[in-house]
Image 1 (cartoon, one colour):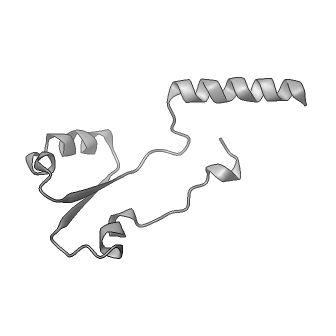
Image 2 (image 1 turned 90 degrees about the horizontal axis):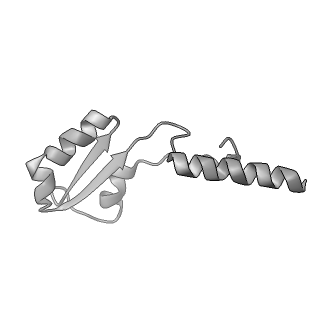
Amino acid sequence: MDAGYNDIQSWNHIEIPSVFGAKEGTYKTYQIKTKAEVDTLFANEAFNAADKLQIVELFVPKKDAPRSLKLTAEASAKNNAKKA
């Protein structure tokens, strides 16, 4: 989990539409940092109507991963340690 290849460069994702030439008013962007914000967004009628391009930037805690992926990584690490 702490390997350098897991470090993701920070981007300003909500600027992507304008970088590719989208005109103001033809897209909508959202930044989501909590589960409550996800719930609110998914309940939002305007969001669900999707009448224009929508970009959702979702922030997750560092080292957040599904339990199954974490278990697989741990098993792989143990197996690799046996070979060393």
